[in-house]
Length: 147
Image (cartoon, rainbow, N blue to C red):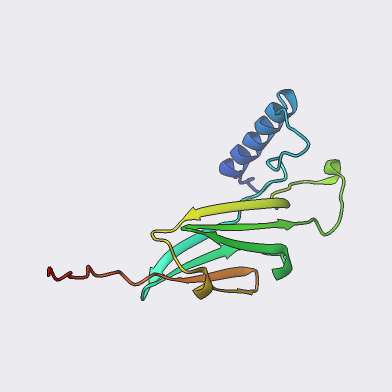
C-alpha cells in the first residue's frame, strides 16, 4: 500500500472556511436592504505605482465587460466601481469549494495631488483595467517684485 500524503495547509484552510461559515450562520450580520456591503461584495486586487510622472493603477477585474466598470475622480480621490454577476446559478449545496466572488465592488484611493480628470486615460484588456493619471506639474513659486 502506497503512503498517503496529506496536505496539512489545505486541511487547515478547509477547517478555517468551515469555522467562518459556522460563525456567519450563527451570528448573521444585521443588514439593511439598501446596504451595498454584503457577503456578495468582493474587492478586486489593485496595484498602484508611478513611472515617468504618471500614476498607474492596475486592477484585476476578470469576467467583467468594460460597460460593467465605472471610474470616477473627484479632487484627489479615484473611485473604481462595478458589478460582477455569476454566469450560472448553482445551488450552494452542490459546491465542493467556492472561492470566486460576485456582486458589487467599490474601491477608493487617495491620490497624492489634485489632478486634472480630463488628462486621465483608462484601458481594459484581458480582465486588467489600467488607469493612467498624469501627475500635475509642480508649481514653482513666482517671485513678486516690490514697487
